[in-house]
Image (cartoon, rainbow, N blue to C red; front, side):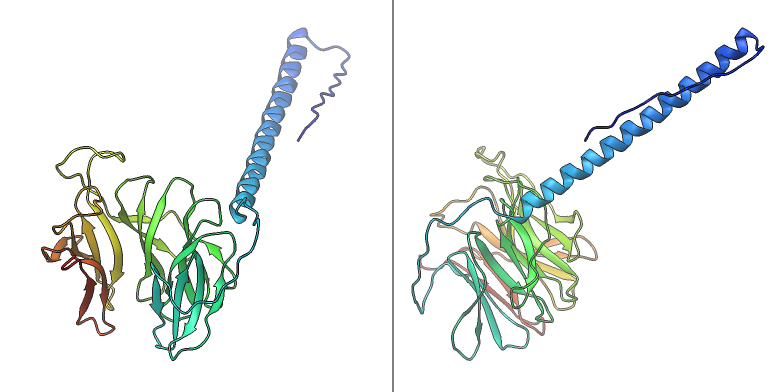
Length: 295
């Protein structure tokens, strides 16, 4: 953007003291310089808006093009994340970076999110009208929302230096709770985002623990798999102490509970063989969790 700046100034006088002429000229110069400053500010604002539009456009499209297409039919999968709608009629699940829905009674899976992006960890909203999921379609992993049929995808979180895991809804359907790290091997904290956007709030922070340094920094607690109780007060999650170890034989992760009213975190169970991925029954009376037992 270019902008021409012109100075047209005419001073007409008959008999005016030289001091008055100088004052008029200085005042005119001041006005001109002030106008120039305003024009420069306007220019900077326009350039900032143009840059923001460019950045937004970059985030909308994954900068990769498919080189080919593979089709196959299967009736099984592994390393899948899935969720059941609250009415019990529909399952949403991921398979190989795509997201599908499937009638709970059985039938054919329907693709609702696919393509070059890696989409994963879908969860239905309480009313079943939306799905929250993770996707790298912006060029880096972020939290996204879409309608239950896959329409109207919307990016909820922004950035290119963070990682997310296990997003879920609060019972009122207004907020998303998710684990978030600063990338790499850093520990995960738990964040809260409004479904309409915003910078989010860090609910449960990471804390360092004793042990040797890791590539991601000092060893720290990592919080994953957050879910909210039906009354909205409690957040249950799995806390891992220290760096991840693939062949850990003793309990490295335990089920914790965070009180949204008091901010207090307590241990729900401390099994020797770990506690992972908690889930709360609809009536709030039972807790289901995974564990490693007998290898």
